[in-house]
Length: 213
Image 1 (cartoon, rainbow, N blue to C red):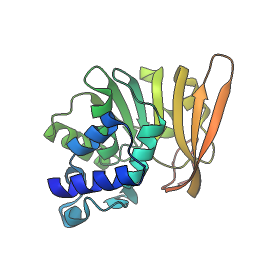
Image 2: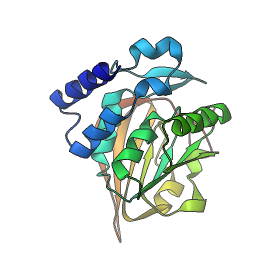
Image 3: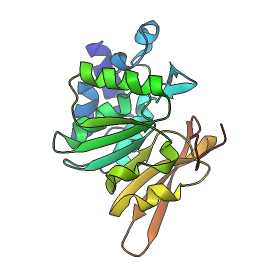
Image 4: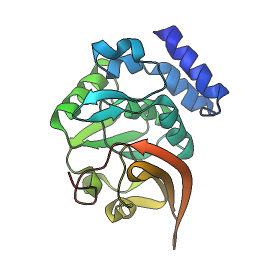
């Protein structure tokens, strides 16, 4: 599995998805096979989404690489992740921001949240807190955040997420339904700047500010 992981990372570097040494190291240190079912382990290092139950998927590694690179993640940041899934994406981010940083991640499926917690405990990852709730409303309790990223597609950028972002913070979110656009939002003192990073495919964000279930 370790050799397969190294091969995938080398492929993502060659294709230009992975560029930053801290993100490359995080990918090399995070065992994707721990975040999927035993029946799919032989596909752990395929660069494709994989089913994790409840009509949810673990994202393709190249998409996680794109998102991590786009967010300009740094040591010590406070992060909000919308859509925990099985926890693979958060596990990678936890290594990028280091022990001085912290991730709050919210998942609407109780069973997936439990599995993610178990995965983090098994890998001794201590700078992630998993919450259950409507991710489209963000997580008011721990705001403001340096970075927010969303692992499912919203019909539009939810206003609560913008309001929970620090000034000069960044929000990365797929907008659309299934086939969507990846939007990077930067919150400056007196204005909001958005940049379209291109097309992508994600499961829909469900909730008050998401798509109808």
